[in-house]
Length: 133
Length: 144
Image 1: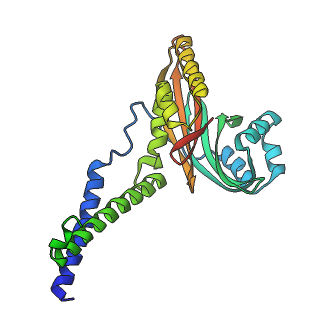
Image 2 (image 1 turned 60 degrees about the horizontal axis):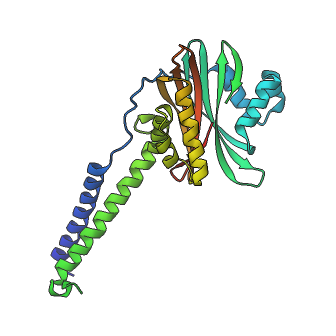
Image 3 (image 1 turned 180 degrees about the vertical axis):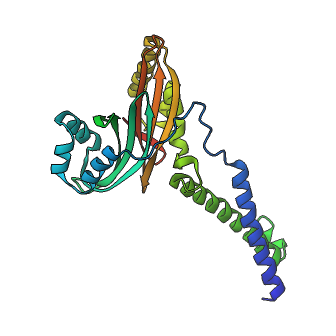
């Protein structure tokens, strides 16, 4: 194969690559804009960070010291069916009228060994966790 | 076949390269765009299009869109969902005040998106609550 022939083939391939990219860019609609207002995001609250650390460290004693029975029950429901939590990630927090919602994503395994993700939100009033969804 | 044999070999090879390059460019860009959008590397917070559409349908109470974006269900379940939504619409004229995407995560085909929603009912009752969506393969399979 001559150099000129190889160059033509390479050029058409690169031209195709560029065309494909341009066609995608033109036809992709992307995520539509949010028509509603958005609340400003907060840093991770210290109280919820402690809870997240206790969950990630598999520290039942710390959790039982920090949360009352009702909130613990809500947390249990929120993370079900996770049986073995292997990762905890803070994803964001917002505040409105004195209530803070701090969101987390927990990753791990169910009892039958399936890898899953569960999202849950700790609701904070002042320095007290008052609920989990 | 299709008269392609009439074309010179160089032209045939060039056309094949153009098509292969085009497909690779399209699929590669789509994959890269989705990965970057879901990771939130370039702003947008990593909100997926599926989660966004579901949330908009949820706050606007569009039962048809919710059925379409949710998991495949039987006809009776879909009818029950539509009835549920229309009863809620009659019970209260709810006005969404804000919808904030808090963030999410993904692992394989599973992704989680979490939102905070502020609404005001016609009686002036204010509510501020979170919603966590679990999405598998582009369908919202769990809403909490």
